Image (cartoon, rainbow, N blue to C red; front, side, top):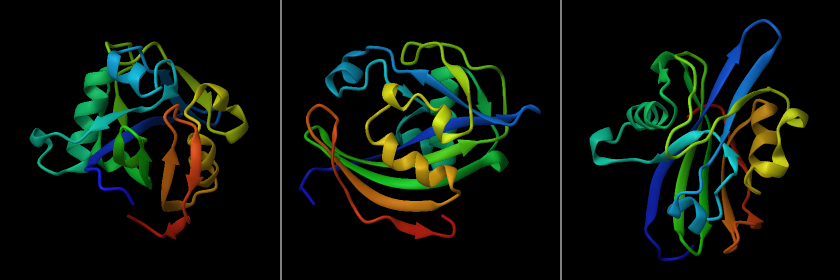
Length: 174
């Protein structure tokens, strides 16, 4: 492990089932200076970011704040499920990311300064636009779609390509 400070944050994916099978919502990152610097501009993703002091150390509070800020949707704590914990390491720093699904929410996602107009995708691995997502999503989503909760480390190069993936430690719950 490197000696860089680790930022703690989350990414939340809105999940729904309206009768035609489950769907997941993805939106492109807008080309903000930070997104461009980190190779994230235009990548399809969920909503999230780093924990802030106002979150009081609560993963749910941080997730609720980020989702509301980035797409105007209000999530309910009883519908949030943590599915993975990934330590991303790269030249821009370490980021301990909590992946969560939000199954209970109100409102329709809308574009914001940070995220563009998204769309619903069938909740199947082959339906995801992996070619438009972060390279590391190819390692995360197969586990999530198989119902496996896990922890791992993923190392990126300066262009956000995966250099290595650590051992997957499967857990029953978080």
